[in-house]
Length: 422
Image 1 (tube, one colour):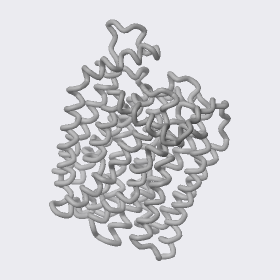
Image 2: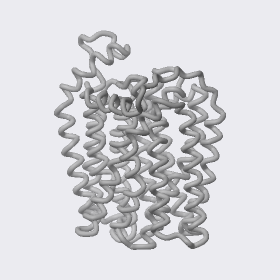
Image 3: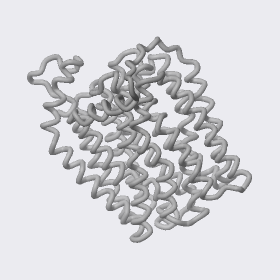
Image 4: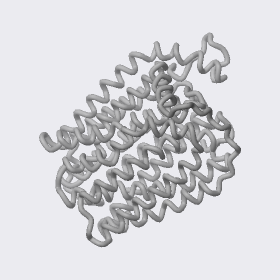
């Protein structure tokens, strides 16, 4: 289950990034709670989330070209240093009691600019950190488990810290946590990477990435699925403060418990994925995860009991992570090395970049019809797009087969299943 950790560089990254991500989740929960405490507005919760993620949507394709044309390790060092500065500024304004929603909006945009380059860079860099390509799927699953272990611990810590000392100390702890990941990156010993081919114009690389993604039916289908699920399903996390306070009648501890439940489910899902030895069969895993996520959202929107909501949120976390991590693995496996940064930039655009639009829509629906209705609508849309993906699996299976034969995943084209098969 942990075979990718045999690679020294990946092991360093796993430990450093794991500590940093706990701080990231502490800040996410503290930011949501602070915005809701200052404004009491569901619409502004959605607006702040939109401001933090729209730069990723707009800049991800350009960032993908940068990632493919430059040193990915150097890109990550720069983005982590800038992210530490962003958290430190949040802490300064909060601890000096100067913070307003406008401060949060501006700093969220700054973080979105950082993430536009950091996310595709980090995803593409995984291949360089693992010593064997066979460990790639395991590394991606371990990455997802790391994120969700942090999702479990971070919100729980945030709930306690917010209640005891306030949001400012949450931001301070996050800023400090970046030291770990920066140190791990600087301690790596990397083999020289072949210099990418330089084109006369940046635009030509950008256009090449668009054509590559548009011309591959499996990659295109995965990206469309992720985009719609991210738009319709993922914004439920933005509305969690409303569920914690108004729907379930709790406070920051309740919010921490609910976010932690999502993390527990997600960890269970990715640990199961990490135990798999092959990417074959992931198409049906994506479908099963998508249906679990959609149905979990609908059931959660109907619950008015904390003790029913918690296991339902765990179910949502498991379904969401099975869909995301499996799609990520397939995209990285199907992509050519010289195109990986650009493909992962479209992954960033689809999975993370669509969330701000969904958050804005969910905030507006919540203001008009209530948070449960907004989440319920998202669940229904999620089920619809997963059903469409499921219907297209046979055709996608034919497209994937020759690629997997070439990669040695399928030894021969006859009588073999593929990533989209059973």
